[in-house]
Length: 284
Image 1 (tube, rainbow, N blue to C red):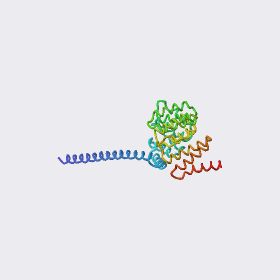
Image 2: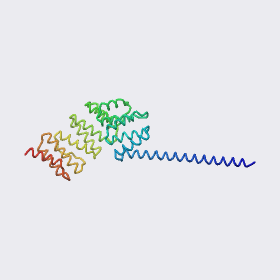
Image 3: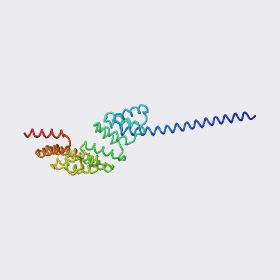
């Protein structure tokens, strides 16, 4: 009479063991899935920052092909296309991103950025006009300033640049852009001040140093400002000043600055030598 009970208990035990093994197996699978997600996220970040831009494009194209509904992968593809300077494709990729039901206002701003890079200024303005004013970010206002610049709406441009500067802890590049805006409209003193501020914020930003020298040269101030520069940078800045002097009609000063540039450069400075010879031949 006891045998059926024993058989039942054994069967129950076998079932319980099987259930335990299945539960444990599911937990292991989930754990591996979590690890895979973490690994994939890390790989996505690496591809967006450290890898060759075109390799990143290929990676995200494959990933989107396998998982077309993944918004993070669509964003990765769009960003990698921007990094690779494949602007027409980047515009299309960001257009796909903003169609996603989970797309954010930041995605629309990125779309506008891609349009600007593709020289589609009017469309970029329309996209930004559709972003609510409550979305106040550095990137949004920097783009707004650039669009205002393109429309020569200087008052609006200054307002947007000022707002953008206040929304970032690294304002050097936007100060440089603002300075170039001032330079293009003939506000040389304002441009000089902004380029100086940009260099103070980021002493490694050579573009701002060169623009500063351009602004001073346009005012017939041919003395190099006190700047943290390498020997090569000093030679390049002297070259820029020399060309500025020639453009202003100060030929003798320009020749002297070009000679200084050639002597300062630690290697052969082909561009400066060529410009100097052209001046000498013209005057000879």
